[in-house]
Image (cartoon, rainbow, N blue to C red; front, side):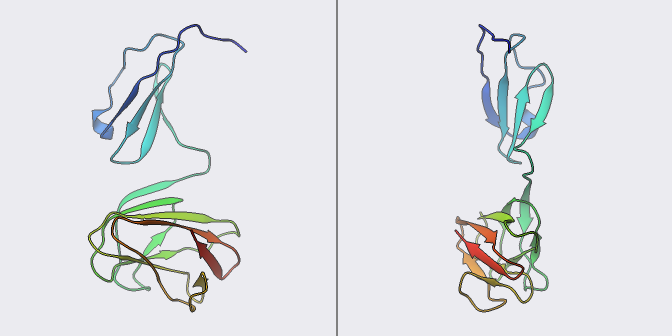
Amino acid sequence: MGHSTLITDYFGYGAAAARPAAPNIPGGCLGFYYATDIGQVYAWDGAWQAWAPSGQSFAGGLAAGATQGAATALVANVSLFTTVAAGGGAILTAGAVGTWRKVLNRGAAALLVYPPPGGGIDAMAADAPFTILAGGAATFWQNSATQWYSE
């Protein structure tokens, strides 16, 4: 394994469109830029390349649906809601045991997070929604085909 005597880091942040086309970083060094609007980290190694932890996904700028049947499906590992009206909701999608979903509510009202139809969250009744207050967040873990737990 080779070692570099040059260590130069570029820890920039801002909108994805504001990311520099080519930062002034010496060859053999790495730089990083965080796109705050889309939650993406970019690494510079001579050419910009998107980087995210393996197997994780992000969905941002989501709007909540009005009922369990019309709730926005949570399919990404991390979902950011920016538009939430009173009574707005999202629904967990069934996956393999161990599936997790982090939900951030940056909307104006509480976000209702529903389990898949017939499922439950924590010790709540089947189909009952979990509430994430405006500005809050929660992580949900699938324990069985019908049971999710919150953190």
